[in-house]
Length: 357
Image 1 (cartoon, rainbow, N blue to C red):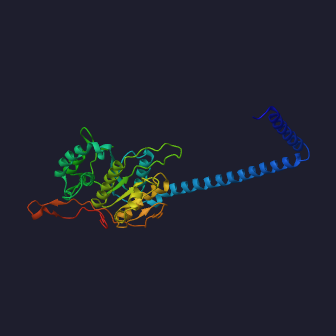
Image 2 (image 1 turned 90 degrees about the vertical axis):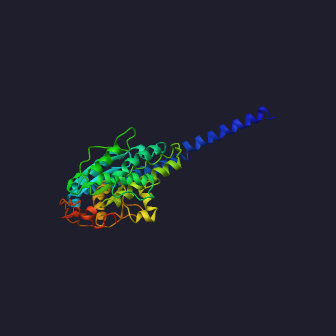
Image 3 (image 1 turned 180 degrees about the vertical axis):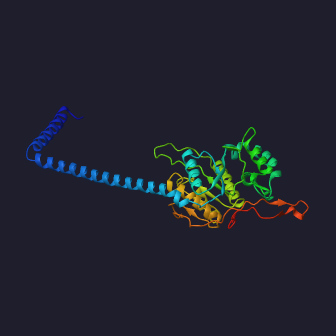
């Protein structure tokens, strides 16, 4: 056993070491230690002040750049989509600030937004698949062209939505066809509405902007949220079907997404060579640079140039400049006695260079 003398010696050693430290610190080492600590504190304070000055300068430069891009937007966009009619489709709960900013930039480009549509959870809820199957049977009789025989449920619904939004009456180009109106009514009404409409849709759109729901980055210290991979894949498939239909059944479309990263729909498109070669995308919709790019990207896609715009991998900052021809909305009459009911007179199609291509 350790006796009392061992504890006594240990305590005496501790107090002797403390006494020696105090004596040296207050005596011959006092100035050296004090000067060293003071110098280190002064150096750290100087470095902090320099870093703060650099951060303030960088923040000021970024604010100036944002202000410049924002102020340049109207001049840069002027006439890019002159008299084009655009439907805006949100794939879910998109921040209102992004919606408003995209609308503003479309207006500055000369476009007219004919519809604001939001997909509800019923669009891809696995528990409502039977409901969607029954619903699609109602809309198919209003579709022309009809979906392919092997089209999936997602593809059928997506094509119905796009035809509802773009169904301008050839004989009266400023109005929606009865079939298109029926489709939108079926999708937006009932016990489980598939879409919500901000306002009644009365005019067919020429092109479509699709707004993805931005993915929120998870905090490092946040608990991981379990993800049902099957449900996530089903949701992505449904969204991709909308993107395909928007491009195939209109003059052109563009996907607008938030930051790049896991779960980003832009990342999904860029990871698939077939999709990337066909669908135009813009990332960074929360930034003024991304917002200004949207009309330019859509104009380029209508003209047949497909691209991906932003500052991430596989993206370019700006689309190639294009000049779209004027819109022609001359009414077209249909002769029911002519074989196939082909239109007579001038075509109503707008600039179709690259449309759906």
